[in-house]
Structures are given as C-alpha cells and as structure tokens.
Picture (tube, rainbow, N blue to C red):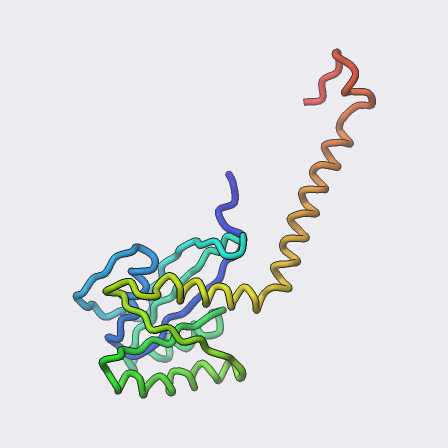
Length: 182
C-alpha cells in the first residue's frame, strides 16, 4: 500500500466560544458550512491531506472549546501543536480583545513568533484554503531540517533496496536465458 502522506502536523484552533472555529474547520476539511452553532465540548479534531511544495502533508486540526471551563484542557494541546490559529469574530469586539489573552497563553510556550493575518469566512469560503495552506507552509519551513533528513532517508532506503536487489542477481544473469532471479 502506498504511503498517503510524507509528514504529519498538528494545528490548533483557539479563541472565544462562538467565534467560528468549528465552522472554519468544517469548511476546510469538508467544504461545508453549518450556520447553526453547537458548542464544542472539550476538544475535537479532523484531518486533511494537502500537498505543499511537492510534500504530502497530513494535517490534524484540533478544534478547542472556547469556554473558560475547558481552558485547562485546551492548554495541554498547545505543546503538541506545530501551528496555532487565533480565531475571533469580526462582529464581536470582545472576541477580538480576547485575542491578546489567547496570544499570551500561546506565548508562554513560544516566546518569539511572527503571525500572518487572514480575514476568513466559513460562510463564503473566503481565505479558508489559503490560511490553512500558509500555516502549513510556515510549519514546513520551521521543520525544513527534519524534512530534508526525511528526504535523504527515503532516498537512502531506495538506494539500499536497489543494491540488495543487485546483490541477489547471479553473475551474468542478464545474458543467460536459463537463469531466473525472481
């Protein structure tokens, strides 16, 4: 069975309750929009594979509950994430103001980071694919050294398999009609 992806990354969606984290996730993974809101309890996730720069990336996207009572659970997922989306509702100034609180929570584990800004809409599908792809690209860049090692390892494995195959061939096999080296 062929390998379905080259690398696996975990991305995290955080922000206040009701800002649209689950809607963004469903739009990206399933290309669906559900206008009715059902609050996430604890943490949920979905997966999607995308290709970036010839690398098949399997993304686990963790959708966290925004309610205060779940924040101790949510913080446990920060350490496992390679990328984090800070999500707020543009029609809610309060959710925008809380972004700084969410960012400071993330900053406890990552002191220096640069953030790209994307205005997205799960309803209209505005910048959904672009924002997930960009974060995946940034994570790939951050892990470039590991990925180069992965590529070298895969190439070495292929060369080793070819060498082993050559070693199993009897001398003169290509010229002898009676020899079989299956």
